[in-house]
Amino acid sequence: MNKSSFIFYLRILLITFFWLWDISLGAQNMTPFEQNGHTSADYDQIIKYYQTLADQHKAVHMEIIGTTDVGKPLHSVTISKDGDFEPASIHAKGKLIFLINNGIHAGEPCGIDASMMLVRDLVENNSPLLDSVVLVVIPVYNIGGVLNRNRFSRANQNGPEAYGFRGNAKNLDLNRDFIKCDSKNALSFTRMFTRLDPDVFLDNHTTNGADYPYVMTLISSQKDKATPPISSYVESQLLPSLFSQMESTPYLMSTYVNVRSTPDQGIAGFLDLPRYSSGYATLHNTISFISEAHMLKPFDQRVRGTYALMRSMLKSMHEQKAAIQQARTLAKNSFLRQDSFPIQWQLDFSQKDSLLFKGYTAKEKESNVTGKPRRYFDHDDPYEKHVPLYNHYKIVQRVEAPQYYILPQAYESVIRRLQLNGVRMNRLRQDTILEADFYYITDFKTSQNPYEGHYLHTQVKTETKRIKRSFYKGDFMIEVAQPAIRYIIETLEPEAPDSFFAWNFFDGILMQKEYFSSYVFEETAEELLRNDPSLKKALEEEKSKNPDLEDNARAQLDFIYKRSPHYESTHRLYPVGRIY
Ligand SMILES: [Zn+2]
Image (cartoon, rainbow, N blue to C red; front, side, top):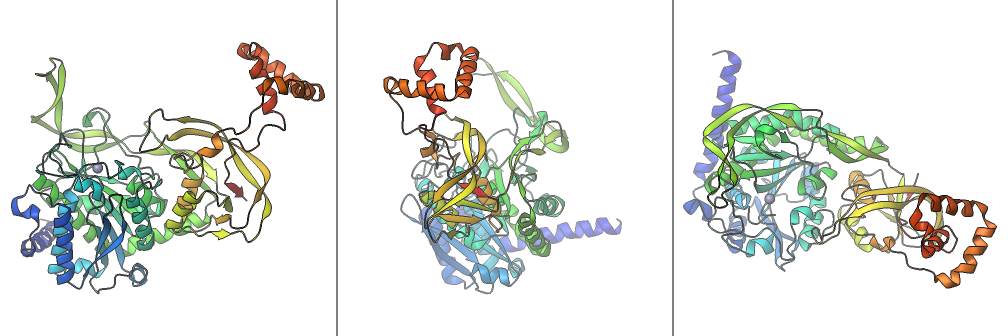
């Protein structure tokens, strides 16, 4: 054995030792899961359990961080070795903050039970990992969902024997709610997230989809969308360290298996838009992950796999503290110097990598139910081979950042969300007329059916005009060069996929408010055409191109009306000005 292999094996031995050491000593405060391996704690058990730990240990602090749609409080549990629970002070001491979210999809509770064990094991063993990291756990996020306990809603999932429901008390999927914040849960979360400014964030889930041997899969926030200093650190140091640690546990981990057909046809990177937890965290330059334990593995393995992953993250953070701090500082500063920002990305199928993947061969047989061919994954026919990995997202749209955005106070729900995200804003001290660039919304598509309580706009197209508009005392000026810059741009630029415009916060501008009566407008139209030969020419040209217009008197009058001073200039005028 050469020296490097010796060090490698020694490392694995030590990792396994520390990992087992903390588990084996955690005999007190058994969780409901540990009593039989297939029970997930219910809401009361979860809260009571953490309250007991907080009563027993000075390093554990449980607090209410806000309310939720179901009316019950949202809790966080902070584990801080020196008993300092103030985020600003923790950062000032050079410690890292690791935020873990659980039960956002309450039917996927692995993280709920694993976090209960992890917190206990860390404090009961006075773990050295807490020397450099303060852990903040949301015991359960979707409280309405976890109270809606059932045994059936996860049709394909292998246990636990009872679990919560995906929708919350308003039947919202909270993992699409981080920008629109329709739920009180999301508003409470946002307030806490801004205060914490976590260095690393993990949201625990259970996956759907194909069958393969891995117990755990991991989504790392899309590298081409994250700020470059963060993606280069995550790709070169953090991910290799996480995968290597997981190899020394019994819980195999793969990158998230996002497939269109079967894994051997190719795995694609996931574009975590800001509506998702990890995409949201990325807007604030937090290193972010979503864990997806594999639904077909027994609950016992999924909980322990999630535990192992969280512990590996803590250990990597402990070891790579300086690199994490440096990457985040660089990321925050790089954005202050940049003047053009990407807002849309697309998977680039022309670039592919290869991933060594363990799978089960996908086959077809006749269905006993329908008599038609059905897919199955043959456990007797496993493979390990290189499969295509498509994980390059190309930027398809950028915007030039203005120096300021100016936002009328009328849009108070937008203002509230900006404030909760720590966006610094100044208010106009007097009424004024400002010349700024404004977008007209020239085109967009809207979903036919409601999506998470909204009729989401996509494929938004705009045209810029420089105009003078009145603003009033109390309207908001937002300087773009500030730490929340990505959040500001990706929510206020209407063409960004998760902009407030896309989520219907500005729909008032899309409806014309005044019209005309054809019989009255006839004379006005006649005069307009007489006085403006170019308008007459434009009408004639349009008629020759468009026979429907030729045959439609009202449409011809409307064509003239829309090009006259009578037509309202605010129709489709996006009211957020940009000052350069
Ligand atoms: Zn989920």
